[in-house]
Image 1 (cartoon, rainbow, N blue to C red):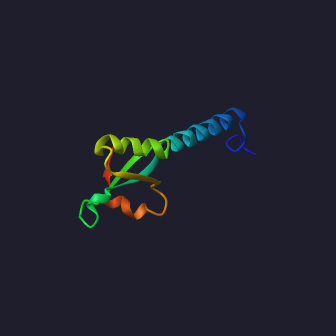
Image 2 (cartoon, one colour):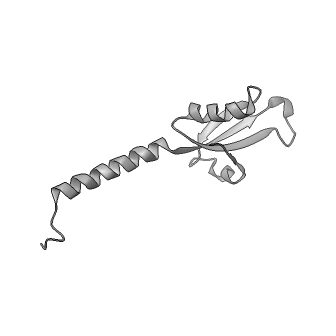
Image 3 (cartoon, rainbow, N blue to C red):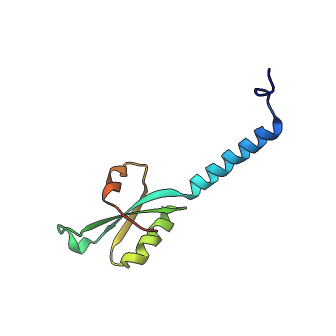
Length: 95
């Protein structure tokens, strides 16, 4: 093997650490889609509001939205890469 193709242990370890850090960062930045529904507004245009946010957990995503809309609405958060990913285009972003 030439020097360019030879395995260098230091480079290998550094590469694996970088991949592990990227994976940890990716886990922390999971995107959620949060639906906020108000049973008293059934049939009206604002019955269901859709939000998108990044959070560590489902409950953190719901809490971010809860701080904006109050206690009246029911919340349900789902991973944005799941079955509701088609709803993202109409979601309002919450930082």
